[in-house]
Length: 120
Image (tube, rainbow, N blue to C red; front, side, top):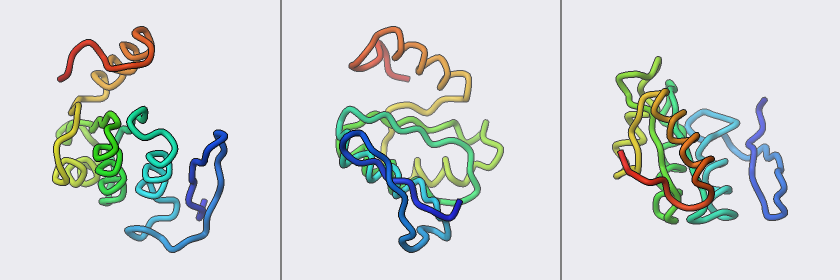
């Protein structure tokens, strides 16, 4: 708690006590942005239920880098603010209920690297 989690080449993880982002530390934005720096278009980022806008900017960074973006359908989220904010920032690859996200992850696991066979 109270540290940002960052990914680095290696792969390695590091912790940071930099300023909170959207009143959050750890911040999903910081994690996604650091992961984008390392994995670029090979990154898969998922935003689930949440009560703040943290994650929306990071997901946008993943999208701009060509990574795959997934957002839980706001209507199925316990706290939809995070998912709604993510969708306001721009198009995402998938908007799915939790079961659909699980199915997508299984499909990706079975198909290996690359894109899933269909977009939702």
